[in-house]
Image (cartoon, rainbow, N blue to C red; front, side):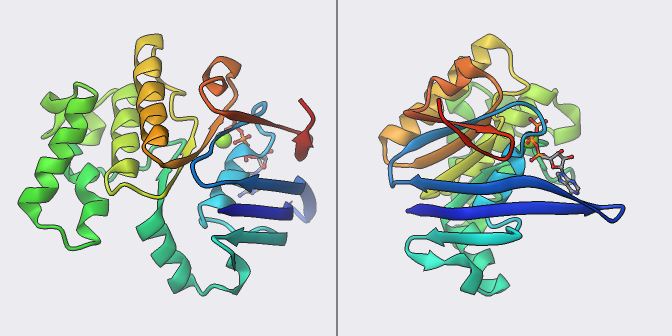
Length: 221
Ligand SMILES: Nc1ncnc2c1ncn2[C@@H]1O[C@H](COP(=O)(O)OP(=O)(O)OP(=O)(O)O)[C@@H](O)[C@H]1O
Ligand SMILES: [Mg+2]
């Protein structure tokens, strides 16, 4: 499903080039639940953003479902993002003008689902995490952990083929961490391919496979 070959990423800051990813080779099969583990600043979000077609590598090849992503136009990439990929941002990126329910329903609107249906689906997702009472609130009236769980529900609302989750439990207490990880596990058992990023080994253990990034490359475990 996902195949990365010699992916490199460097940033130029004040005329100095910083190599963040230094040759990542990675394959993720359909139905996998992979965790990318590594210390802060090692390039986890950079890699996940490339996987989610939100950023481009400086060099190397990314094949998704057999297609070379470098050959896709921006419009084609946007279509893939919308139809196949759910993304949980490390900083949530919820839309502040929309209620919780409407945030979760955003991806459902792409397929032209009717408003009433979208709301029913959003409420059923909220009930999975016992958060129905937050439906009409706006994100800036929620705690960080509540926003994080809403961001996860938004990412899964249209049943994406693959889910990319950047520190999805980074702001949650132990109890909610387990609730969210159980939900991810359930989605994976139903067939969703998941790539999750964390710096926490206990969280990583929920995945079927752990990949550690160290010094810009995949380290042997
Ligand atoms: N747009 C950018 N311009 C310059 N440097 C960047 C940019 N984005 C990331 N970096 C640098 O790349 C490195 C990796 O950043 P990244 O966000 O991928 O780390 P991370 O592993 O996700 O860290 P954390 O666990 O803290 O979220 C960092 O040193 C960061 O400063
Ligand atoms: Mg990060």
